[in-house]
Length: 203
Image (cartoon, rainbow, N blue to C red; front, side, top):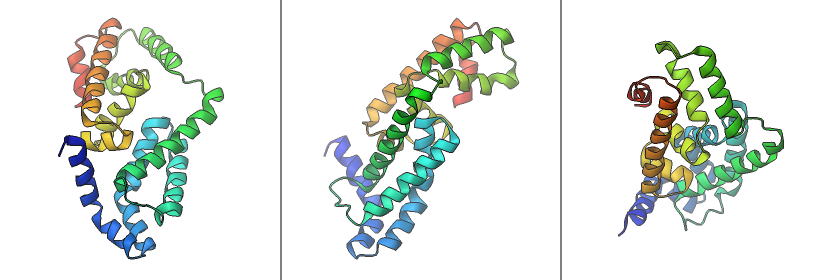
């Protein structure tokens, strides 16, 4: 069995109690377990994708409603967690598309804002590190920013991040490596001292 197959098998085993309830026609009890197990993770994924707490809360609630409505028709061809995260990602992508014309926080705009703030401060004190590092993180390309937020800030394991984003674990590891490398480059370019001290904030 290859790594991806093992991952799917482990995910199915983890949710076997929910699947058993669904098979017995007990959707209310199954959904109660879904909420207990996945509500926080759904919100974390929405936060990583939308970068706005209010929008993330709305998207998470909408995703859970959609999951409830379709739970009785779940056919178990994929792992339950994969299906839940797919519903959530699709809801977030719809929200991103809707706000695209009104969203001023493009990667370029965030990067410019970071540069301006760095110039104003002329370097950062230790107490400013966490805040400024978050601004640099916000300027990363989406494919690197999302896994970094989920892994370092939300405390999700690599396999969880992979499931949330619908990619292989090795892809997540590669993205995390590249995200840290990009942050290091930008910290050095901004003249903010030893980047390893800054990156310890992520540990």
